[in-house]
Image (tube, rainbow, N blue to C red; front, side, top):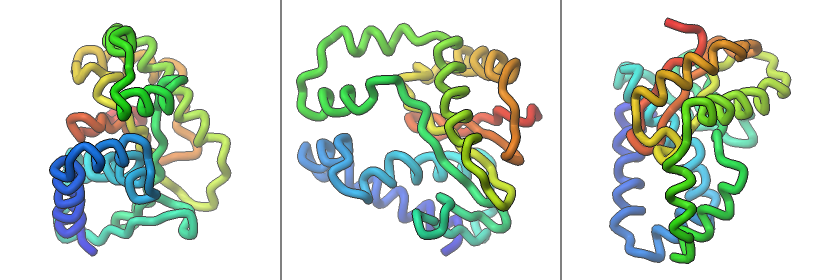
Amino acid sequence: MNVSDFKVQYEQQAHSILSGGLDSLVSFLTHKSKDAKQFRDELTAIYGFVRTTNVPESCDIKIGGEAENFDAQIGGTILVVVRALPDNAHEIRRQVAHGSAPESLYTSRASYSSEKLALMLLNALQKKQGKHYSDTRTLLISVDGEDTQEDDELVSNAIVIFRQTATIEPFTAVWMVESGRRIAFRLLPPG
């Protein structure tokens, strides 16, 4: 499949989830199916990356999985995706999906700072740095829009803090992809 086909399939799946009613949305939020989890955790980040970095529409893309030991391959670039999540992310998803999330949940995430976002990014990076890869890869760190507040200044400040302590090895590049707006920000190397 090429990037153009991937974008069309992604957009159709997103439309299906959003137009499928409350049951579809609850299934998506609670990861009731492997497909819902892959869409939320990996495909959204990959979509944001190809959209933001202007990967040519004709470029080949292969979506990986456990058997391939990668999340996607675009041309010769192997992508690995990891989610940067707050400590209680599974509980947050469950509460929101079932309509039982307290108002304090929303206000606590709205108070996120650049320092907290940078720490989430570092933790996600370190989780993947512990793996040993036999080839070169690009890491995509997926972050919810609630955690960035979709605020470019907060994101820019978090990137500065992140770069002060993060190391790129074993990756050739590290990107943050904000799932809410589906846009990518280069973390490492600076450029």
